[in-house]
Length: 356
Image (cartoon, rainbow, N blue to C red; front, side, top):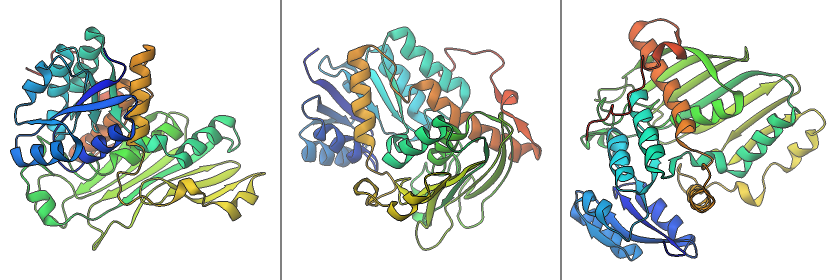
């Protein structure tokens, strides 16, 4: 392997340029050599912008000896299968959220990467945002005291055209507002509050023609005894209005919002109330999109993990956590009852759950 780790991007849609630009920003550590998309024009366009070689067949990318790692940016229903194939070819895997659409497929992907001795990173970039890092340190320091309540709120908008592309909003390839749009905030909430014990959820399709929910609400019971609420939707016409998490403890109340969990909305902590006057810093300027600015940090950590032979911060088992919560919400919607996370665990983990 050369001093730079050589990357390919599979799937050249909405999120792919974020990966490509992040790799360009890390040019002393990484090199983008190939991109793949079934729509040739998308692959050609991204390749031209970032100096890579395009193809319409992702398997050609996996067969290349000059590719060390792949960023999988395809529809969610393809993540596990493509990740497993990449691992079988000895490639490190960076996969967009959700890492799979079932726990058995998530486990199969994690197992495949472990057996192949390659690194698996799930892109949960908002964990790396400075305000989120500050909140994590605050909770771990004990300054908030015992955590009592945690909320995740995603009030976003998607036009009908978003769901007319053949895969968004479908059960086979995507899921609804909770699985696609809200999973980052659900991940952030459980990362701060701790493990979820059970959920009770409602979902509905109210404003779009699609298979899955465009509105989902849920109550959560954490294993600590704390409670939580999740609200996620794509119906807040005419634009994204809020994406936030709020945490309430015995000695403090904190909310992180902004475009992409990048801004401290309030920060009222015993002994730290003076920070209320200085919430906005140079690191808390709203980014231009909900993707935020931390993909580069995810990729930098992945590169360091590969070189150091350690797990990245958002490895497969971390990515599995928020997936399990959303799947429990879906089961609660279907059954009309409270669902414990233990109830949705696969009866037996099957490493070959995803057929190749």
